[in-house]
Image (spheres, one colour):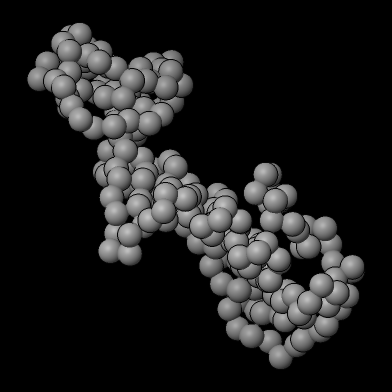
Length: 211
């Protein structure tokens, strides 16, 4: 039977005897490679020899180290990272005024799951999904006042299927795409005929997953 990882306590065939890189002792414990960054965030001493870790100014969140920097546009980036310094976990950006701009999730440097973007007034303006690092499923767009503007359909990073463009409160134009290529097909239909997961209020999309 394989020993459980010392940090996450989950048994797995990928665990192996691990020497703590933060300590000079030669002891070892069963540990997932991807769990070692949690040592500094959740432990104050080496789990092998109990020697206290030296003081550090590094910030931790959920057991992972945090990096924060501001780019040339004044946008502040804050994210947790793995042992290879790749974004891993929650990745947030903030406008110069301090308002949240985007919220995404990364897995060892690869974007995954649902991402959201807000304007500076806190209105959700984009909601989209990543699968294996590329856009997949529905991409929702609202304007700065919360009015729905567009819904695109992605498959493996390319526009694929229907793209909905809201002409006004009552009419939507549907354009068809096939693996990133525009098909010469347009259809205007009443908004009332749309499925409930297409016509979506931004507050609903902000509060829960749609699909």
